[in-house]
Image (cartoon, rainbow, N blue to C red; front, side, top):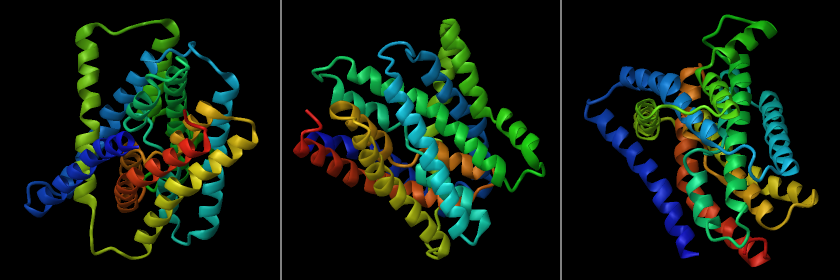
Length: 320
């Protein structure tokens, strides 16, 4: 268990330290709200699309293709997203906070935290297909996560004056992240690859996402706002780290998933909130305070919850 605890700390602690650096830089006057706003624009329009493109166009979408397993994860993500959205719409009086609450409650850090955790757990697994199956699930769910989030913000986007189905569709199509997904799929299906200089450029743009986003998160944090919005962030974090993974495991178990498949499902749902989810909130008109706070809370506490879930799975014999 110590290796999983160490990995959780190694993965999540840099996020926390970079956010603390953002707090320090804001207090020292090195960065301001304008820097945060422009930084989020750079990440949203270039960093995240390049990251998504990288993951999708390199993924082997034909190897270890378990249609039933992928179908369950896709349907579960969409259903959970819709349920949380429905309940939030009914229970949250501040309508401007709904999109940020929902986005924080179901978006997992698939591209940053997930892969290294799967590599540690399944590199030497007795079934050699388990690791590629988990990475394939990450690639597919990245597409689903950004597609559903795009719909969410197209409906609730406070910056958009367009209404109706046409406005929602146009908002989704014009989303840079969705464009990155589509281009990545085209490259993957057609077997195209980038020349070395272009791939290195894409890699460099992908590399700015985590450090710049977390500095912006730190600069966005305010320790004087422990009010209703903080409660929204706290509840969404609880939904993300506790309700979503526990419910996913129960439903998956009832559908007959066991062993490594059930473990992959648990991890996919127990990951902390995605950095990209916060950036989308900040850029598309959501409440960036809720996103920044929920991101920090899930990053800190996921080191505890993930380790606990892995321990329980080992005791129950689901994880070999």
